[in-house]
Length: 507
Image (cartoon, rainbow, N blue to C red; front, side, top):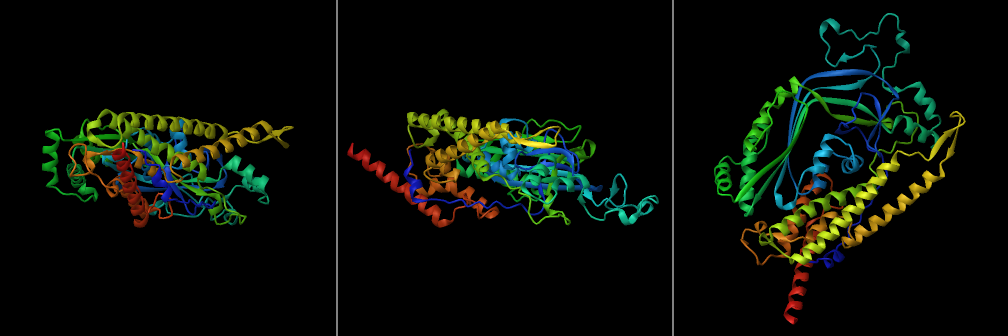
């Protein structure tokens, strides 16, 4: 069903302010490795292999265990829940990234798959930056009595040892008076942030998807999973497991698990749902036996207490890049749903096969075009427009690099305009899902097509559930729709169905 007219009744405006993020940001460590105190380029999502702060590493020991259990509807939402930035999402699409980003990019998630994100993290401790006093190689956050002296060695002039984090003398010289040219050079050599903490241990990330011919059976299977995770704080219903087991035996419900593990040693690879749940119980001991860096905190240099300038470093995601990434991964999930509808046409209500294939061709073309743009963003991000000359004493403008970046800006603007037009004038990529056929299992009263399905049911299934989750975390997001906006969408869908019925009766 071609539901282009829906979007004309609802225009969502996205206002983006270029402000720096306050405080530290946590994300997965890059595959290329990480060390404490190194710089970070937020736009490129890359380590800058220079240390521009004076610090001493501080180690806090002991295990911390966390469990996250969230419903997810598409790959874009999975990226967001795993804390994958726009820059890291681009790298996940075109090359190396964090383990979390690679998992989200490769895992199949759709609205019809009733997917749960399970993320269990065991931290053996944290290594973080502290003031350079005392001058020990590594000190404990909770020192034992016999080594608890906080005084520096006798040969060090205590008055000259800083009691706070600060820039190195070389970094301060580069920053100079904080002019535009100085800031560009500082960001090139130091980045906009630094690695302020590294977490080691193990992390297990999984997406558990439930495929069922009945929405009630799918909910029952999810409640059973939650009941089995009750020791981690999840809320479920133990009696749901009996019904879920019966449904899986008779083939009406299927539960699949995609997972990845960072760190840990000596454990078995789970071969089924029960093996995965048992794996969670072994995670603390595996983290102790074979720890690995799995995440890090990034802090903007402008958050340092003695930052010499009022101007904050811009560590926010580029809004245009973030929009393209959001559309790319949403369309990825739309492609999964379309293929499933074509493979199982008797289980969906909506367009005819030829119309679905035409829509699928459009989605493939848009994904191909976005991917090409993301590849160009990734390629040009590391090319400077100012290059050193005369033994580095001067710089000159690389006109070819400037021209390529201007072309890229025009390409991104044109790409955005095409996507918004394709999406009925909205920057909310989730509205594209309203063009999808609806699974019969989404409505309990529908066992096989044809079925009478209301606009409210379509909007709730493809947009409403995800919108409510987004509103809880980010009410300013264009993907957060209030009840009035959702009702307007539902009325538009009903009106379109009525128009289509009138056309059919006339023919």
